Image (tube, rainbow, N blue to C red):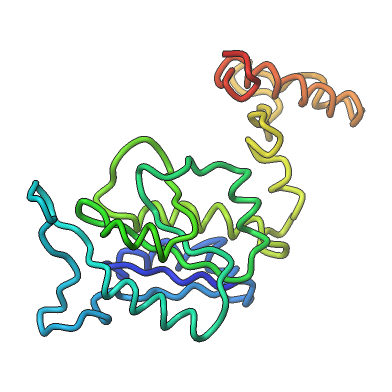
Length: 226
C-alpha cells in the first residue's frame, strides 16, 4: 500500500510513523508513506496556500490551485483508490472504514487547516471525506496519523500475530473482552477461574459474553439498544 499525505506541516507527522508497529511496517516494505508539503506547490514567493473567504468572515481558506496541482501531479504517476479529505464534517471514521481502506493500494489524504478548503476542492477533487470525531483540531495531521495507524495495522504481515487485529474492539461491533496476565493473584485480586481452566470452548464463550455485556454497558449504540 502507498499513502500520500498532503500537509502544511510534514514535520508533525515524522514521529508517529518512526516508531513501533508503523516503523516495522515501513521497514518491511508493507506500506509506503509519503509526506507532501503543499507549500511546494504554491506559485508565489511567499508560498501562500490560503486566502480570505469571499463574502467575508473570520478565518482563512485553503486555496484550490496548489491542491489541484499536487493531486493532478500524483494522479499522473498512478491511479488512486480514494482521495480523502480529513475534515470534522466528514463521515465518522470507524473500524469498518479502516477495514475497507486496508485492502486498497493507493490513497491520498488531504489534511485540512484554517477554516477548511475551497468548496470546489470538495466537489471536484475529493472522493471521500472522513472525520475522526465530533471536534475540531488545529489541522488534519493528527487525524491522518490516527487513521493511518488504524489502517496499516490491518495489512497482512504488519502485526506479528495477524489474528490479533481480528479480535480488536469494534471488529464485530462489540468491545473487546477483559484480558489478564501474570500473576494470577495480586493483592487478593484474582484472574477469573474460567481463564485458568484450559477449556478453550468455555473460554471463548465467556469472552464473547463479556464482550456483549461490556458493549451493552458502555456502548449500547453498537448493539442498537439506544
